[in-house]
Image (tube, rainbow, N blue to C red):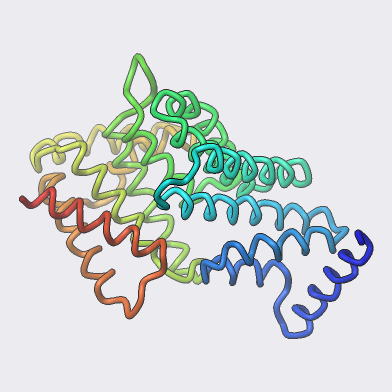
Length: 298
């Protein structure tokens, strides 16, 4: 039976190549189409069908990503068993570990391991989420040591610095969260403009808006702090710590944090409404953006 499964896997991959789509390209397409259950089966078959360790590594981190997406969709179902979610995210973490074993320089493998760890912590509750913050942080630092302009890592780090407590309990900082969110957005925009990314993710704008709302600086405070942030940005050499002060290196609107937050979220809502159809993940983001905007403008 195992040999038969391997043969079938090879046949599936061959068909994909014949029609101009490699296994990795198909996995990415199924991801974009949010056919996650189908994608999980396909990637598992593709892994079994290839002997190339680098291709296996590429497939394993994509499998980690797919399992996380399955877990995220399970989370919004009513009555879902917590143990099912925990096992799902542990499974996703395990696939990322396999990718790292095969390719220690695979930044996406470290990223998706971090993401699955974070989801596991969220399911277990606030104390466990806080306990998992440090290993997540170190994994994302590892990503940036390989790919210093990785948009998704800056995006997640921005959320983490907003959500975790500050010193002495943890490393949280509303000021750093804003700079990291701005860097994530600019890094994503650079990828989009270069053709490396197909679209701008509205979730990046949403998280910048949330970090701005949380920090709550006045326009005068923003103007006052920019020169010192610009100096620190120039002087820092560590990739992550340098970007704690990224806001000092760019032009920002002459408004308060909360005014900018409302402007951004209003635009995000209008962009979602302009789409002819929303994916499942986009529908979740749209509902959250509406809820935030309504809460901010009451």
